[in-house]
Amino acid sequence: AQTVTQSQPEMSVQEAETVTLSCTYDTSESDYYLFWYKQPPSRQMILVIRQEAYKQQNATENRFSVNFQKAAKSFSLKISDSQLGDAAMYFCAYRRGQGAQKLVFGQGTRLTINP
Amino acid sequence: EAQVTQNPRYLITVTGKKLTVTCSQNMNHEYMSWYRQDPGLGLRQIYYSMNVEVTDKGDVPEGYKVSRKEKRNFPLILESPSPNQTSLYFCASYRTGSYNSPLHFGNGTRLTVT
Image (cartoon, rainbow over all chains, first blue to last red; front, side, top):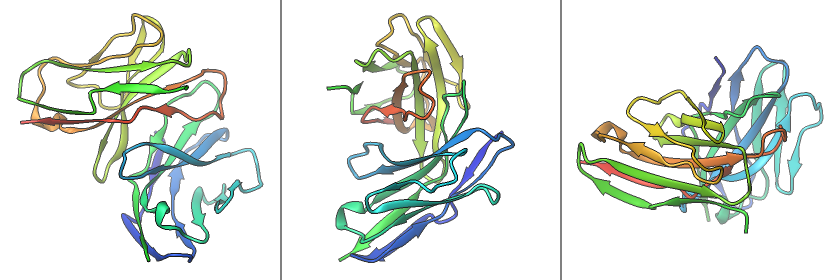
């Protein structure tokens, strides 16, 4: 069974600084997708970024980027120029390739932004 | 607006009193699913449905029931709630065949069972 591990229950960063959230996963599949979701206090689940395993290039969305290391099964999220609105719980998630719909989530990392 | 709508947003009940959490999506998605979120455990899948009248167990199905009589609706039923079902629940939907598309989540239902 696939598992996703986020080893940092909490992180904090100064506003305007850069922070990296860690995620590792375990799978024997070669075709899969990885996601980072943000959950602010409103509880809404917001997709931040996604990565297809077959793509070597790291995904980027504005201030958010990932470091995808397929061999190491690592998928970290980097947030540049942190803003107060980035404060939230962040979940890493895995989904197997074609035919699969279930997301397997990590435990979550609570990110605090210090002004 | 494309959305997944869950109701209620908050629910407090007592042990053994049957309850239903509703979920509806307006995107004509085939796949719908229920997750529960607990501290330190992330989100775990309870049940899912690939289409009308097709449902299957997820990772933590005990104590829950679902039905899918219409494509847009996927209610979660707790026949006899217990305190260990106190949790934050999310409904999600997805268009099958779009493999890199994300799940669309509802806004969550905070359930407390006393």
